[in-house]
Image 1 (cartoon, rainbow, N blue to C red):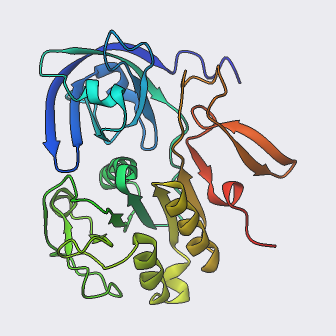
Image 2 (cartoon, one colour; image 1 turned 180 degrees about the vertical axis):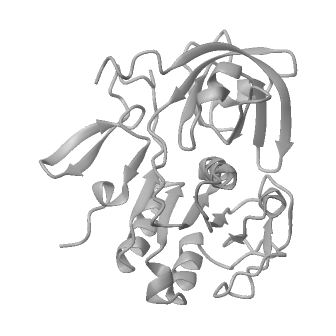
Image 3 (cartoon, one colour; image 1 turned 30 degrees about the horizontal axis):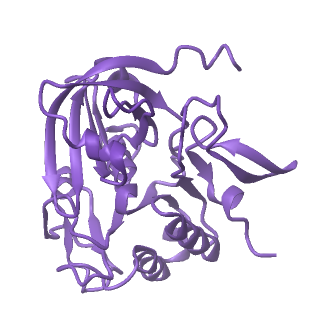
Length: 295
């Protein structure tokens, strides 16, 4: 097992290509990192050096990887000095990058209707997963992407052109990029954002799932990333409808390569409770392992 995992994390001197600034201290960073971009998978992340004066790296989920262009995109929100320093990077600057790291989302052709739920800075892996499904021509995927945010979305939104039966009428806007890809999406917010479902994204998911026939619902699997309370809510929705669910966890990480075990979380396994490292054993886990069904 150790030999199989050797040489899977790459160290690159990545060139900053662009920094897009969005409301609420949100940024989308684009870097040239061809080796990492060639092998990154939805759910994996990178560990970036924010500034030479700051020795500790910061983990960021990969939002998009373009192997042909050799580029990676990251969405992040300024929390602390490290990401504030990263936000100062300009085109031509360099950042040391370790990646891709972690176990990504697993796709099941028998579940051809993936429901992708992203909240806040948990949105990036859902964009990456949607792009993966779009480019996978082996199966007829029919994904639905639901995004939640309490601050303005760091993307262009527009009136949804793709109808989604069962979605409440208030949720009538979609992400521009997903519309261009032909992937239906809807938005939720408790902050009265225009075109959004007025509530939590997991409540929107529950309402939509309740409208499906048993036959259609049997083709659904939930993939989710976001704050811990949202992940637990997504798990409870999955359990209520007897659906498989995968969660991408967010944890503080020091080394991000499994050495320090600072990101370890309790995981329920067939052998009992175990501590597993989010960085290399995850970040994607089966939801029941993190939030087991109530006894």
